Length: 210
Ligand SMILES: CC(C)(COP(=O)(O)OP(=O)(O)OC[C@H]1O[C@@H](n2cnc3c(N)ncnc32)[C@H](O)[C@@H]1OP(=O)(O)O)[C@@H](O)C(=O)NCCC(=O)NCCS
Image 1 (spheres, rainbow, N blue to C red):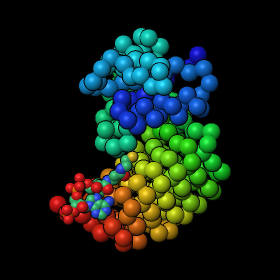
Image 2: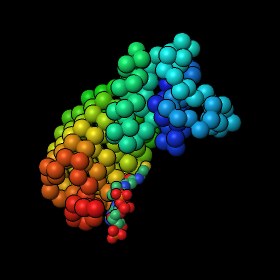
Image 3: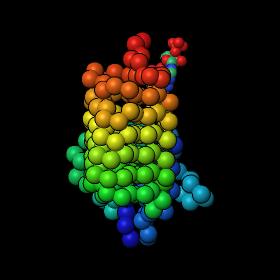
């Protein structure tokens, strides 16, 4: 029996639970949340425990984790706590309905149904590639980055660490995006973004300044 702890207990964590159950046979799943709204989650009529203490989860056999949140800064906080408590990252979960042709993939992340990765692609640690994300040749996705459903990353693009790439957004080929950048839903990124932590929206994407 494989035991996997999902970090987070929100909507994406519940989706991640189903993706893991589709992928790993004979698997026992539980959740971790700093401030859980209840003691457990009910998914498809099955009850899953939510821990708020990593030591307790470990004592009950949960020694490996997968990230279950999309926001990069939350991923960083949760993985830091999990490592400090002695847990280890499980290999990234690659759903059987994802099509992975030629990619190097890190640990602790999740690659959802419908994702397509073609050739010479590098995916870092704790990366979430949500439903139907496509990533073209020679692309690089940095640690803690998230691509929301339907993201299209063209060939030769580079997303540095902790990029949050919005639902249905796309890049022109050969674009680099700096650390901590947010790309809004449905944006089209036509040139490299060098301002770390900035937010870009629209077609073509322009910086959103509050
Ligand atoms: C870009 C984004 C991060 C901005 O969020 P925010 O900082 O809370 O911004 P606000 O909602 O306050 O919007 C600020 C302005 O930007 C506009 N805006 C927000 N998102 C936009 C988008 N994706 N495209 C174009 N304009 C957008 C708003 O209409 C608003 O314009 P206004 O000031 O003229 O009214 C967010 O809207 C977004 O697109 N997030 C991605 C969501 C996603 O992928 N979800 C999937 C989860 S699985």
